[in-house]
Image 1 (cartoon, rainbow, N blue to C red):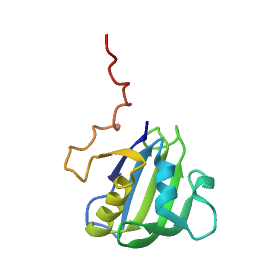
Image 2: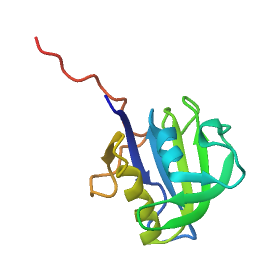
Image 3: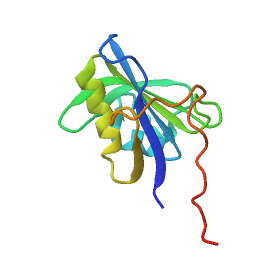
Length: 135
């Protein structure tokens, strides 16, 4: 089964100079590996948790120079493995980076913010439940 992730824009749309796109779940580091090219030569899979790395964020049709940080479970905002892309602010770049996270075909992605679903409740999303089993 594909790794499940959730990705969302974590900053107000179009307000600041920096936008943050958070990717959470067991496949978060795999998303970063496909989308981020660090400038310092450290491979994404060797990222030290809680440390910012600069580099290119590769999206569909464009790229942005920004930062990426990896938070290892359980010491993350969501309690799962988590990656954040810090890109230039504004609406289009942030949405483009978000779209690129859920166009990766190796993972099943829940498009929470981009599709207009309501925001998660305070404290984040509940843990994933096992699918119902036949009786």
